[in-house]
Image (cartoon, rainbow, N blue to C red; front, side, top):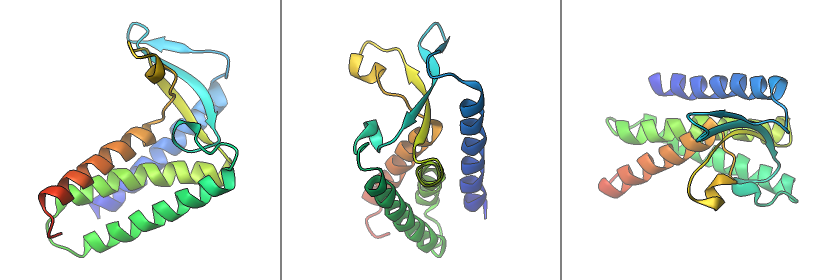
Length: 153
């Protein structure tokens, strides 16, 4: 049950944070923290990662829904297995973020992004993220490493 609570907690936390960003932040203003290295702003991503497919929102939403359903099935199947805690953790992080971003795509028709970083890499500086993006990446990484190290899963 802890994994289901984690997924729900991630979704609800991001839901509240994204609603806060929507209500309180302006598209034209940036708030800088950590010596200007962390930037909070509001951005509506109408596509997928890096705004890819922004002109095909319905297709992006469909792919997002199908991916999320597929990962949910894998997660539910993993719950029937003893052990595999790392994989369950990875899938929980991934799903919490995926549910949040998929919800945005279906409900808002865009994903609320709000954090970027000032780095020595110009391309990275132009990317705006949300917490769900990080959790999807971390969860996918944990899951992939677990499967690679335990191919009999």
